[in-house]
Image 1: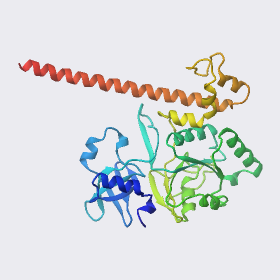
Image 2 (image 1 turned 60 degrees about the vertical axis):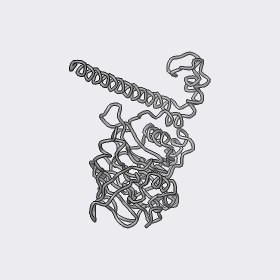
Image 3 (image 1 turned 120 degrees about the horizontal axis):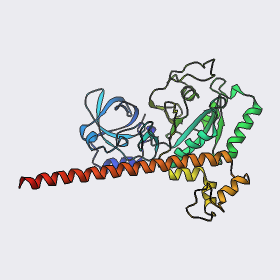
Image 4 (image 1 turned 30 degrees about the vertical axis):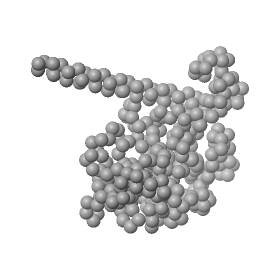
Length: 355
């Protein structure tokens, strides 16, 4: 295996030389778990930690390494290395951090394509698909929709589901598969390009780990049987991890996401809901919210059936989430600024009192 097989390229090598990292080793983060990492190189895999300076200078959690990152490291012993620097990221897939207002969580970095996996039974939800698409579009990651467990429905039902997706989500590839019967797996394998990085996104139990095992022809991830009471796969994956497939593709498995919170993803919303954004230019008011205003081109299109009502409602919901996230960020910045002023005033007061 070479670094190029892991996705290394000329841009990263030039950055390495410009930063004077020639004497350091280079590898890709393949696993992250509670600020402990595994770094994969051409020949080995190392346990890794970040150096104190990198920890001290980090402003946010996103400054720490994440699965998919390229890093410069020094060897600590035969099995352990110290991470000194994280290379610039080509793409970042992230969402609003669960339970943390105004913070983002990195899902994976340096991704080329995202497999958005949904089950055709209980999990099928186009609103959720649009959420994942928005995250991908904001990151300039090309999405591919995977409809799994097609053995649970008949051909007619499957055709209706695919049609409903393609009517609502334009121009995105949709591939139907079954991990049980292997139907569609070969087609999916042929779409995977050597040296490109793919990320599995989806809820718990939709079959992401089983799909990874089928794509690699190896039992990389443990899987459980389907629950007879819910017809839902029991969740196994508890961490993010990067794997190399036999055909040379690189894939990152992720724990299932119960929440797909929208952060400051304005570009993602505009690309996912392109029709709404384009029509908004025809509204009477430039600051139209597309809710109650007169001569709103978007509302007119919804009434005429030119825009799907459910898609419109989903857009409004995510737009409100984005606005709330932005306002939370602004509020946190103001508090930090006020706190800084208070500290400065305190220091100046102490200094003047000495004299």
